[in-house]
Length: 481
Image (cartoon, rainbow, N blue to C red; front, side, top):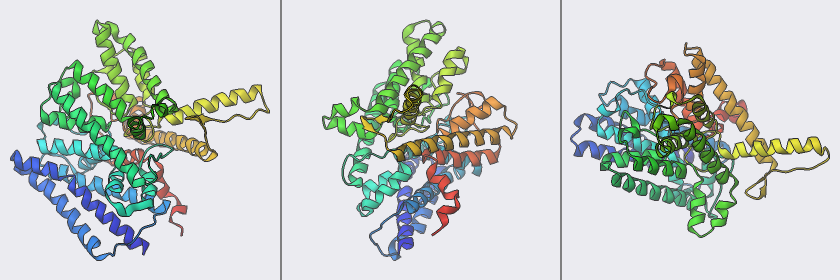
């Protein structure tokens, strides 16, 4: 009974993903972009044709999802979403190959700000909107949205959220996981709307405001302009973007607690305090080093803060060619590529909470040298970390380093220089989208070999799903009964 029920659930989500394309289809009709009607209509029809028979003929049953079922279901949902989204690019008559189409779609849903398209501004507006919508949907999570909307998930939704939501801990702000999912998506929508309005007030037209609102709050970073946000050359837009990049990269359950008057929860949150400290220290050091380039402290702090926030939050937006900055400023940005945002946020990377854990663990080891018989624990958010959390953090960081190393080797084997290979692997695995060398701020992935683009697509999805969800499927134990 469980297998048909899971197939039915997958069919419902597939049909739901098709609905994400409806705004882009409407945009194509309104703007008379006739060449884009078929590219959006086709995947929508395919999704419905495949899904409807399973929905109608497989009986609805109460579903109890195990962890194994959750990992497989989440992975399939993201793969299907990526493939369906790639059809929009492939049939768009924009000269995008099927490999590049898959890469672009994976960049969207995984909120990685990379692209293979050299001239973004030549794309139809409906396709630009789809790029932004896919990042917005992937930012908070496809599964999290359906858990919020579909009541029959029940307690089973927690197994799916564990497989999708980034971070070592999955906080509940309500006893029912569906209520928690609704709150997270509600906060996400409020932030999105606020950002769109501020962008419009700052001088963007409504279309650019909507597209950038979707991609910035999702820490995705894709833009409607070749020059990114630098196109607008607006201090107001840059500072608004910095604030919302930081908001998008912090744990969304904290915002609900703040709204309920629990301000203490924010100030005792170890990860939030560490995250903001990393940003301010990085922004100040970077800004000080680039003052001679910009002639004033204000302008230097604007560009330094923007780029520090962009890399730290894994948004990947660009406001300046930071490869021309002094070596120390570039080094700070390179190190930020190893960080990431907070757990329970829209950002990628290792996550700050894991760095905090290792920092505290290192302190404990130093204490043990002085006090060999002492017993020392790690406290996070004024709670003692469990042994399960400790083991999970260490294993994840090892797996992350392994994937970065493997991706570096595979990239270097294609003939790309070592530094570019390392920066590209950090960018792709951490869902950042930009880096240094071949992955620099104004480069793209169009010249990379096709097999690398396909491999990167898998790595981007794996990075968005915290690696475990994908790589556990490659273990023999997973497939044993």
